[in-house]
Length: 366
Image (tube, rainbow, N blue to C red; front, side, top):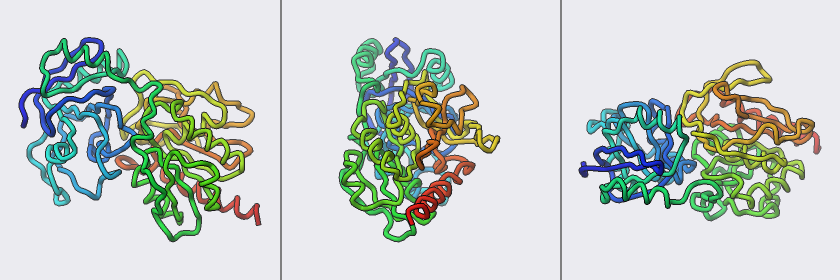
């Protein structure tokens, strides 16, 4: 343990605690996640770039960390806030402690924080800018720093998490899929591969011409961090590809990219949806799925032309858009995470829906 730590919010609210992981100071938007497990997958999800994550479950770190459960090549959070950090790790798959893992990647953890009070505060006031520090313990100084820090609105964080080169994830498969990497999670790639997809991953800045050059059977739009409207180079590329009739599947930020490409608008949610236990209604099947969520922005249902776009899923907590499909083009997307990492497997069927869409498109061409 490294001693005292403070997290200060831009509205003047301050929480004191004890540090674990790295020492230092970082700024970010403070948010909360309601998952009971899966902290390693959360830490390594690139969609959390720019955010200080608060876990609502009380005990974190008790099963350690292992390389196999990482969702990318490094953790991306700006800071990690928990009620109690477990010094004891007990799991046969554990390779190192959570504190050592955070320290290795220079990420600050703070424990002994009243995470219930912090979560309630965010729910009432909304997600806001914050600073977490082990070196400056002056609350007034940290509040000033939080106010001056960069927020998420209008900020392109995709450029900071996308892999800089074209890479082949899998070389065997029935369907050639081009995936645009805005911060793609490994388990999405694993599931595409397991459903017979030969996946070429393109950096977020790839052009429509570069993607069309491999003659893909389908296009996948990945998750990622930040304000979707700030990533115009991606949704402009997506617009060109979907209008060419390429079968397309989007998840999370990819769903937002598709919404913008189809002429819709996005807006920032008050405190976002983050966790592994969010209920979503499938309007086509009249069923409820328990889903994994991680997003602070949303596509505005009213901004989409109902003559072209059909709403397929809605969030049962607040009625926001969770899924859509185009009525004329072979295109669909969901706001939540069907790859279940961490979380339930209710929505894995969407990957088969994607391969079925590519199969139908092939049959039409032939």
